Length: 406
Image (cartoon, rainbow, N blue to C red; front, side):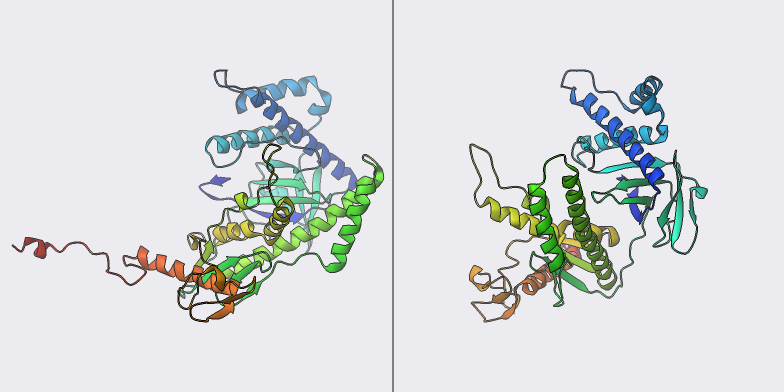
């Protein structure tokens, strides 16, 4: 959500007691119920009918529902009203074509709620590695003080992931990383085998599960296929799978944060390919009338792209280095020789080798593409300053004295 400037979050690991965890789960259920009720109200709307109720009307309806149902009245009014506020903001983003239309929330997926109007004394540090946050109807809940909490926090969100872990995220306005002002430009080529290849010659790979962890995940998936639906055994297996996948997700996010920070500190301009990751990772199943082709191969490619964190890396670069990330047309960047600029599909002999058929230039295929991305960005920078990237005539206004000659 954008409010003047980018709103970021600083997330910390919560450590609630069993009693506190039960109340937190109830808050999640109330927020999910209110959200889904708002979705249902707007689902009945059709062109020509009266518009769905707004935030003020829904708050009045919530007050009536709390007076009628004791289980809803026992929850926090702040949590429930904020769920309606979030829904109103989501609908505004949808009509503003900034986000997709809000969808139903399911139990166990995207569990969480938001608290606003946070006061200065609602967050405190207990010891070197422990902090506490005040939650409505719960009291003080401890979290791991892994870094300083941003100052001026006005709201926070508590979430629970698939692995059953609780987190608290404080909303704050992050400060962008200042440019080094060295004039350095770097090209970044994103791939599956090599997550990010830099024009400097560096090859960066997202850390994934280790071989032993992959073998255990495969055993758990086979065990899940044999488990009876609804059984306790199946729920335990799903919990174990979720913990492994959460570990992989944490490693990918940690890699993205460290890589984006390093690039923002080292280079003035960061050039990346303008890839539509959402379209690239769509399913190829097709329909019954027109089934897709190579569906399994496409599904494997989709998993590889998502595991490499293509979209997340560029998104965090734009957050940390606003205005310094250039998106370049990706066409022919992997088929063009960086030495002689000859373009040929045959020059890309393999995933890792680029051998130009014209001049014999030999380089890593991903690094060669990253250099082409960098050179294109340098050309765009020159053109933006008033000249042509190819060294052509400089853009100049007509000279008045020459126009008067005659």
